[in-house]
Amino acid sequence: MAVYETSRSLNEGVRADARGFFSSLIGAVAAWNDRRVTRNALSALTARELDDIGLTRGDIYNV
Image (cartoon, rainbow, N blue to C red; front, side, top):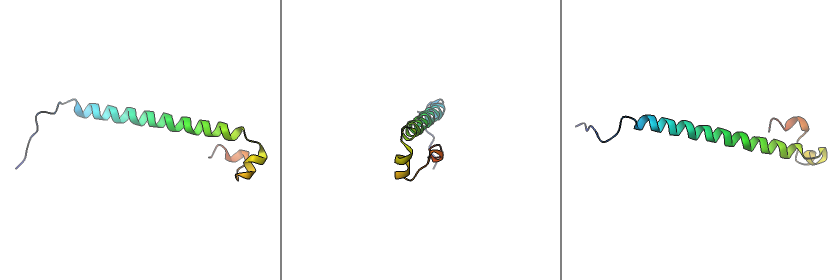
């Protein structure tokens, strides 16, 4: 026997899609900012400090 639920609004699916979009957008911005902060911190290190952790200046962008 099938049950049809009528208490759900028609806009509920749209709202869920919008929430998913905005949460994905916020997550992408947060990840970008984390990468930016990491690159800036690594760029501030000397060549010797980078060598100690096994990186070169050319590796910073790929980290």
